[in-house]
Structures are given as C-alpha cells and as structure tokens.
Image (cartoon, rainbow, N blue to C red):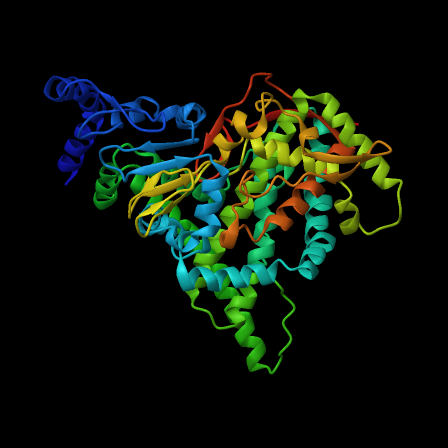
Length: 512
C-alpha cells in the first residue's frame, strides 16, 4: 500500500511538466491556439485553457480581472480539461439575473457540494431546496431586530470590553507587535461560538496569542484544503488523494474529525441539560443561542452540527477579514482615520441615545467599511450551477451543468462600474449627503453592483449583524488606540473560502 501511494505521489508531481508539454503536441496536431469569446484566455482543442489556468493559478483573481476588464460584456468563458465549463461575470445585470430573476435555475449544485460536502455537510451554505429554506428561516429569525439589540448590549459589548480591549491595552503597554488579523479572528470565533453555540471557547487571551489553538487550526486546515480543491487544475487529483486517504486529503479528514467532535460535544451537553430540566419539570431554559433552540425543537444532531459549522465559518472569517483590511487601508490613508475620529467624537457629544442607536449614526465609518470590502471582499467569488440551458442578459449562452460565477473582487475593479479611480480607497464615493460637516446619508449602489453580501433569495441573513459588529469593534479600537503596521509593504490578498492576508498583519499598538 505504501509503495502504491509513493508511486501515485510521484506521478502527481510530474503532472505539471506533462501539462506544459501538451500545447506543443496540440499545436503540432491541430494548429495554432484560438481565443475564446469575450476576451477569454488562450484555449486549445481538447484541453481548453488548462495551460493558461495552470500558469496563472497563483494569481487567478488578477488574471480573471484583467480578462473581464478587456471583455466588452464583462463576462468571460473558461473551458479547460478536468473541469466544468465556467462562465465568470462582473456584469451587474448578469448578477441580478443569476441571483434573483432566474434564481431557481442557478442553485449551488452538486459540484459545489462535492468540494465542500465533507466539511460543511448539509449546512446552509452547501445545500439547496427545502434544506436551505429551513435553515434560512431559522437564521433569519435569530437575526431579528430584537435579538440584534440584545446582541449588541450583552454579547458584543461583553466580548469587546472584557477581552478585545484588554488585549489591545496589553499590547500597547508591552510594546509588543501583535498579529491584528489573528487577534480579530480569535475575537470573532469566540463571538460567533457564543451566538450560535452558547459556548465561549476563550481563544482571545493576550498571554495565549502565540499558543496553539487546535480547534482554530482545524478550521483553518479544512477551509484551506477545501478551497484548494476548487482551484485545482484537475479535480481528479484531489479525488484520488481522498480515495487513498493521502496527503492534504488525510489532513482534511483529521481536521474535520476534530471540528465534528468540538461541535458534537457542545450539542450533546445542551441535550443533556435540556433533558434534565424536562425530567425535573423545569420548562424554563435561559440560553437563547441558535443551537439551544434547534435542540429544543428536536432537530437531528447532524443537522444541528452542519448548521453550526457553516455559521461559525461565516461569522469568524468574513468580519475579521473585512476589519483587517480596513485597518490596513486606514494606516495608508491617515486623513480617512482622522475623519472617522471626528465622527466618533461628534456622536459621543450628541444626544443620549443607546449604544445600539448610536451605531446607526456612524455613517462615515460604514462608508469606510463598504469601500474596504469593495476592494477586498471577504468572499472574492461565488459560484452556482445551471440546471438547464439559459441565456444571460448580456447574450452569453449558458449550458445545463455550466458553473456560473459572479466575481465581487473583479467587480470592485471594473472601470465601467467605479470609474477611473476604481483602485483608490475613497470612502467619500459612498457619501450622498453631508450636513454641517457630518455624513447624513449614504448612496445605495445596489446589491448587484456591490455584491459582497450576495443578493436575492440567498442574500446574507447576517448582513446587519455583520455591520453592527464591525462598526462597534472598529469604533472601540479607533477611539482608544493607534495602529501602525510593522512592515510597510503591501500585504497579499489570499482568496480561500474566505479571504485573508498572507502571513497575517503584524502591527504595533499605542494609546491615543
């Protein structure tokens, strides 16, 4: 068995050399390469654009963006050996058609489940139809206005004041560089576990920032390997490795096992407590997290676990990524941070509204968050799979089974959508009304132009909670601390299941 695995590994290592040799053979047999419609990549008979894809595999975002910018319709066609025919679009009319107008023809689809099914199971981000509808209703109910206010006044305030700010203060006093990305990810993980599971893993402690956190590492490993499945030049490679339980696929299986154990233990303890209350005739149950509600409603253990894993993934990585990039951009544009400080001071000196109401007044801060996510969206792209033949509004023909991808990262860099200054960080582009030096209203660009929260029936149900969390956290830090990057170089944007900065974001913290 060991010899067989070594042989397979050797064959896989020679695969890139084999791929690079194919174009010469193809051109010799079939003639010169042809170009796909819509300014797509160079393509050959039989193998499609596999060679170009492989050569650009480490810069797929910019490769796609360049081609989309050159396409008259902002749509390209990717056809390559070993993968489904893929349509990639940065056209808002197409995005609206896919996500809303003809929503039923563009589900996630089985190919998506094949990539993420081992990790997310039947969680809300990996299913369609009745399973998706049921979970969405649960989540939407959890994020209503009443629960959102309670979240701010109890959970969020508690986590920020008792954990996040003390850690920042310790970093400021100690003069020690900290990885702000890792700090925010641990904070978000603790927070989402409290909201979804009613459990505090206590991953954010100053003295433990350099210590290993096995459950966080397991989530990182599972996310990274599943994302690389989706970007693999040949899907057969990872499927063979999974069958052989070898290499990255073995690490994925082990990581998922740790995640399942983590969630299952918490859910089992909830069931035990609830059963104990019932046996004693105590109907009252104070825990208001989603897992408790699902357990009380008698939902299947696997269903509860898969829902929790999806929510933890979304709640940890998206908001922490958005805030990390915002702090980086603020460090590059001090005048934007100064304007934010003025807004925070003005709001504090205003009426005696509650903390929840005060967050609504932080419009310049929201403009900064939106502008940061325009340039560095937490989810760089999202794909659906066509159920039947179709045609997009720009005339692109869609075949049944095609993968159809809308591309927030590229959309944020389209000249036709954002103008000549599209690469610049300019929060003022979101401002529509200013009164006495304060932002009174923001522009609504629409969810099909600014698609970071999806749109249509699958629009992110946690959008408002995400904005509330980011505004509260960023405001709390900006009021008290100055952030300065240790290394002035531009960080690298890595688009896995959710995006992050390569090698973290090391900063020095000082008191204001």
